[in-house]
Length: 127
Image 1 (cartoon, one colour):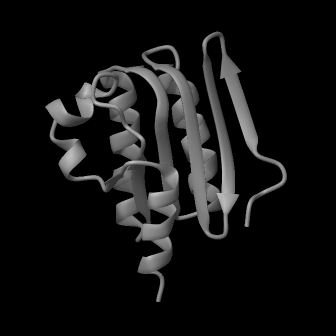
Image 2: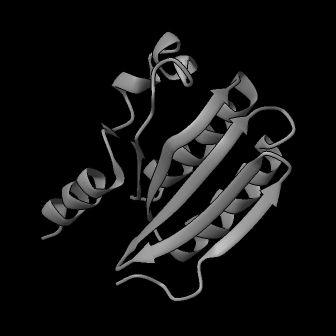
């Protein structure tokens, strides 16, 4: 079920929003993930993680990703895994999110072509 009140945050050229479908939080990012926006990403993911233990990070709108934002993603991934939750990535485009592949995380965190595939995989994993 889609939440009627998605959470939203924006900086110049950067936008974050969240929506909830059943027991899954979907955090959508548009713009550059860098040292400036990584703090906003961290706060946004923290709020989403408090609501749900299954989180999909929609990276389709990301135009750049640096290591500071990668550290935020890894931190939340570890916290979710430790508490029995799940983090999935959707829509990551190699040319803009190379750090995922360079560090090997693209092979460790479940990665899907789009949000719908990630949601379907989450639904399939339910008992």
